[in-house]
Image 1 (cartoon, rainbow, N blue to C red):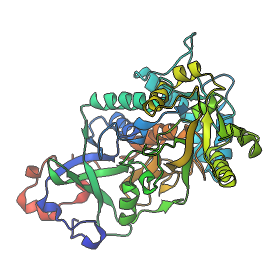
Image 2: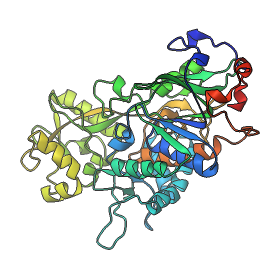
Image 3: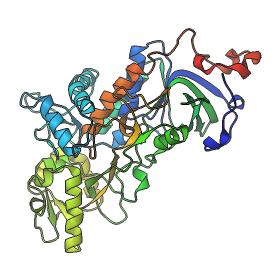
Image 4: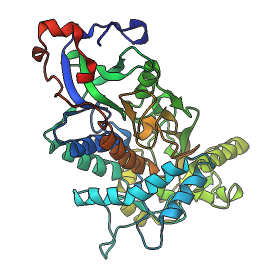
Length: 445
């Protein structure tokens, strides 16, 4: 039964009965690949369910939208699921959860094909076959991409178009989730969230299942590739609610971000090194072979540490030299990065690009099982906000969008299983008789 909340647990004091009320079956916090995949899967599995997706800002302010590299999947005859699994385990420092790794590698190709069928446009070669790139830590070319370095924009557009086509799904932009609402008990059950919208103010959204898919903590660090919205809100609200968090010390730093005074730390995708670019010092000497036999294609943690060690040893900066690729090929393959460099009057044909490691991805997060269940009933998590054990101590390049597709889909298909649906949730405050409002059974919400 509904009872008074312990106000000390929440960021702000509030009385739910005095605020506008919204009701749904599934509330998804975050509109990147994981959140969209969860919402789409929930609406497919339960066509009559009301699903709400809330963005802190908008679709163009997520790590998914900003993603350059692509999506990793074993798609070619020369590749295999086992090889993808092996590369993921190796990059993760032997700390990955093997069932999670195998789940991602096995389910990724089919989910990717489903997106292609829905209209996701990917780069192809002259024969019409998917163009597969190679990145650090991968033994085979297995990265699909769009317009060279604009995969995230294409994927985000495809997913949000699918959401718009589902009448049972509503998307709330510029809606900030302050806190999860829980019942009393051990463990407490998550039954909704308190949100703030600049137009409508504070609101309560009640849900049978709440899905955290709001990304990581990149803005905690001075040097970060993440959008301004990546401030760790899902992890913080899950912690306040009493959910178990895992591996928070594992934060991945991307080796190559543009390092120009006054400029944001814009990502220079690992695919540039996959195409053949070299890391060099000011003298033009390529140094990565001194640190690892895989050189620039070693996993990200290895490359980032080598760069920092070399900078400390030489007391100087390091650079990315794209001339081994060929300038024409570079501009054709990476048009977005080429435009970025032009903005800062950097001609990669004449001089290497100044780069520096920056915080890129939260490996840890809210602890979940393979279906996305957290330690709290009613609360689910997927994507960067979650920790399934897929990445171990270090994420393999381009496994992040894959993770969002696979585990977002799993969450959406499972989050309403076992929920009593004897009667539909109340759709508006006016549906609650005054005599019922003090005795609202949250199991019915």
